[in-house]
Length: 414
View 1 (cartoon, rainbow, N blue to C red):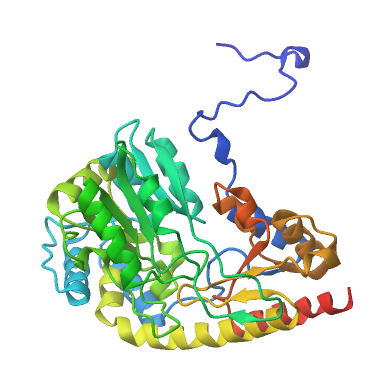
View 2 (view 1 turned 180 degrees about the horizontal axis):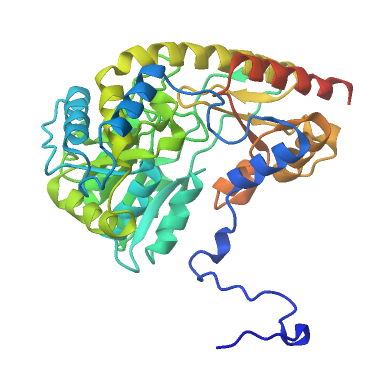
């Protein structure tokens, strides 16, 4: 077919050819806010990536792998040494047996693991339960699988302007029970939770486990922040609870734990029948993950504590500094117990900027204050729940946090 050469023959607007499944999602908020931060020279406390590299010994391992001919396709399920390291780690964490050949698949980050799990395990018309607010790819993956999302709301404690509230977001157990229908096939749990910083309690996970067993549900557990615990509350792997070993997929990655988000080395661990389904989709999505970085990930997992302790200490210091600054400016700060995000209620601050909701607040915060944050309503089905809130990322250099705090002080004089 020959393209028209006469401008009059061209459509006034390009035709939107995006599939109906993906059309509602547009460009991710992370891309949008980072682009605006760059345009305005703002301190970027929006997208959740560090502005520093991970440990040098892991980078050295990647260089060595490049130089020792680990540059061809890796096996589809992942490099054997990495699958073994992941299996051993899972067994240490849960006391459950894990066969690296049958129970592990390496994916292009946890995001691909989520997509592969849904595409491999769900059929059109199935339903998936999501806790809102949710990481934005969850809902898109449900749509790509031809399924329907049903939502259970995580609600914050009552606002207390000028305070740091050390109580977690919670959900109504009855709302969770009522979300389950005969079509429900899967429930997705993210703990520690982005964006609220919540660490699901044993009581909450026990309820989820009981409902999974009762209704024969698959549990998909996104645990990428499992090592980034900022309080004494422990991370509990859902697979370790009664009745859950054979119905749970545990997903994680090295990106958050080791500050190499750009490497996109993730994985899924679970029983062989669930992993087989994930592999069936993974082989046609990416087939194999970048080989030399898989070898470097083996080195990273072999010395995890050495990396995690100093990172968590720095994240705690950043959290406390940013939380104190936000509280002093009359935000209600919801103290995160994990991850590297702070959720805050901006209701008493947004009138200073003439902002009507979270998206307007974040745009004006970039333009007039020079700080970028994320408007959380994009993570909700019930948009009104997110409009009073704003999310800040504190996985940054101390000097970046200091500059962000300095700029936020401009809100005092507005």
